[in-house]
Image (cartoon, rainbow, N blue to C red; front, side, top):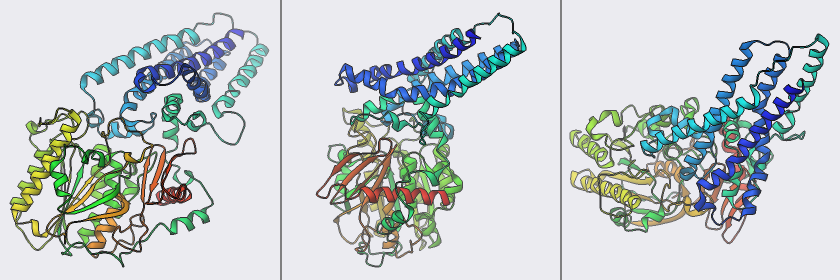
Length: 606
């Protein structure tokens, strides 16, 4: 019996040790980021991260504990092989989550959660498009090597053959009771004690420096927590009493356009929405965008405009459906919920518009085709609709060829009284920034310059085509991506993006200074077209004097709001305000909490 108890304790401690050592290794992998951190902080990261390590080790030790109980009654070889298989699976996932956390943190800036699984299973090639094949292969080999090392450590700890006889019946009953108690005691580290609240990643947040908190998080625990919380929408983000949330939320919605300022001269213009990959206000201030910087002075330039999130699937849904992004999930993952969302395209289709969507990549990535189809886009041009020799980039077809395809289709279509809506999504200004264009020395800015060149050529085409007079072109990014490089999730510049309305349908060039975000495009556009948008309740007409004007945005696991009086970012995991600026600090704190709470109420009902 003593041997079994020692096996159980040794296994648990080895698992804790494996998780504990991951933290300094993670920090070493990002040594430049952590070079300003003292030695004491390294130990604090390990210490404060220990609760999640103890919890995850408890989860992983429970099944071996049951195997030990079974071994009290039999010496079956089946138990041995079950133990080998289980240890192999555990070793693989410990290694995988550790390596993925290191690989993805550079791009996303938050600990591993279920997001990469959604991206990978919707389109594996697109999920790894940001990194080179050599990096992927080396990463896989490293993960396998680490997994083998972990397996042998666990095998040595737990799978030694017990050669002693089984013992008498009374001894086995006594041993079973004792081992059952030991396994039951795993409840304490798993749950984090006997309090009402269960263990969660926020338990390890200890610093105002978020990178230290992220280093303390156990990636295996983080991804399992993320997966387990995906469906329980009605219970997430409960900040306040429902009546209080309702009262605050009522002040933040306005679903009419009865006091809107008219800025277009055509109630049924052809609408072109160009969703530009990763653009930011910051890149507008560089020399990479001569065309777009010129165009902003020819049309309507929204100067206080914000992205709703950090990834294309969130941004696209916010743009087309006027629906806010969520901190720890992507609504595109749930076709049953997105199918009944309203959208610009549904409204325009009902008003007689013809719809078409252009994208040079895989339209099935992140369930995009499912979403677009349910939004009325029966005609979707994607990578498979181009010759193989044009699928040159990691993300599929380069931008200029996608624009060329749209231009070719427009030339072939006779101009009729029926208005059209065309949406084109670019992709080349994304890691790894390999573009068929070489004008700037900086690889990142050169990719933006290429996208700018492609947009400029398309606008020139429209002006020469005879379609310009009845055209309304909306240039808007999907999110801020890679410029400024290495930008934190907790600075306001992370979310500031440009939006420009162009075309002959525009009355006159002007700047709009009210605050808004991608989710407000729907109500603002439909308001100009005099189309009802009362069912798009999260979208506000930025040109309506009665509508509240604010920007709302999220990243894992945080939300932010911005107005002229207050810019605030709140981290849900640590329950702390990470940014609070403006002449009326904390003005938006309760409003933002209520808004997120009501958003999840709405998701749960769809």
